[in-house]
Image (tube, rainbow, N blue to C red; front, side, top):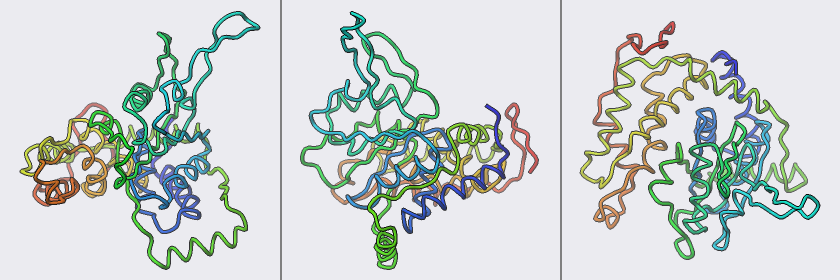
Length: 331
């Protein structure tokens, strides 16, 4: 797959965000994070209260990116086969045939993922990490691009199964939208009245092939050594923080690297600056941190740990070129 130049990726990313922003009102920062996660080839956890546009965001991105989209409502009685698919007996052929499940798509919306038991949650793990599905000993590859956008309600505990740390770690980042301002909420109502219908349809800005070319552009984004060490220092500091029982895994460092590169190309640059790392630190690391029990009693949030780490770890100021192979870029 031939990569697009960074300035072209930045232009297309802006057009996609403008398109999605015409439906999802006033959440530009959160939408940029979601798109950065998609460009970085990862999966996004949308954790927020009901009715704040999580499902609408996933559907709008699928339409603007020209991707095949499926929505799967997770419920307590959902089985792994309902996610991956299963073998059914074909009477005409006299043999079993595989019927693909909803996971065989470009963008899967896993709605209320914490409402289904761990066995069904685990059915997504292989798809998310290995981009493949194994059913009765047979492995099926998922066609790229493949992204999971999962939603979760952070305050409802009755009838829910909290995601284990191992599965939370598979999400590249966690994004929350928060309530809109009164002006933004009035804008939502105004647009609904002018639309004269419930559903909003977006014309594709790009297609699956172009998205893959945009994603390939990240590999040419230079990360100098000082910024790479800054990423590692941030992640390591979460493990040593007094409030953390378990800090971020090395997968957190990789998430910071990928998302910082995505932020760079979205800005039309072929090199990462420390601000790119700072912008994505909380969404990339907070969900990978387990707090000490006494911190929960004091209602401390894991994002507080990341904010403190950002304040305490000095950001690099050098303009050196990277030393890793193939990392040279004009800066």
